[in-house]
Length: 114
Length: 112
Image 1 (tube, chains in turn green, purple):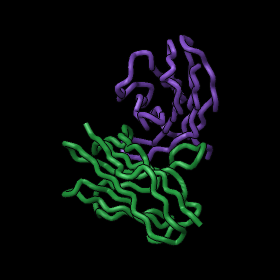
Image 2 (image 1 turned 30 degrees about the vertical axis):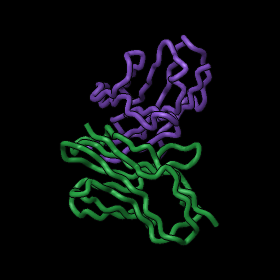
Image 3 (image 1 turned 60 degrees about the vertical axis):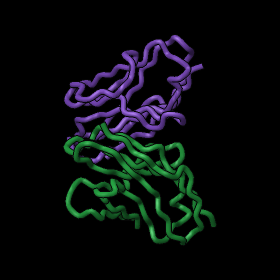
């Protein structure tokens, strides 16, 4: 079984400042890792994923995350945030080979302030 | 291409009733997963169907059930509703095992 811990439930940050949303996971088997974003009254959208290969993965809107196996972490970063990045972000893990059954963290509400 | 469609968008039921939620996946997607989202428990996996067969099941009581039809559309049913079943129920579809999940906007169920 896997578990995910998102260390911060709320992260307020000013526009154009950098941000890091922290995620740690626990698993006895190899895993896939994901970050999803949820805007109000909407479903979840995949932001980025790590399946294998390069440990640094990037999204098309400037977010990146690095898989650190020794620290069992998958922190999400963005060097400069925009108001439109305000949303709830979920870190998720699945057993490698089965990306359809996800275990989610409790979520981090990112609020970008003007 | 249309996204994942969930109906109804909102639903209000009373304790003891049963409810059926519907999910139409993206055309061509054969896998459908269901998740429950609540403020207290967060996002929890309910079950997953692929080609009309349940492949995985989360830790939920037998009151929660589902099925998938030959056109990949899926329904989930909750019988004998309890107040704690109030939640946003999200459906997601994917092409295959390691393909990304596409989520619908969910069905908000309120049990009074």
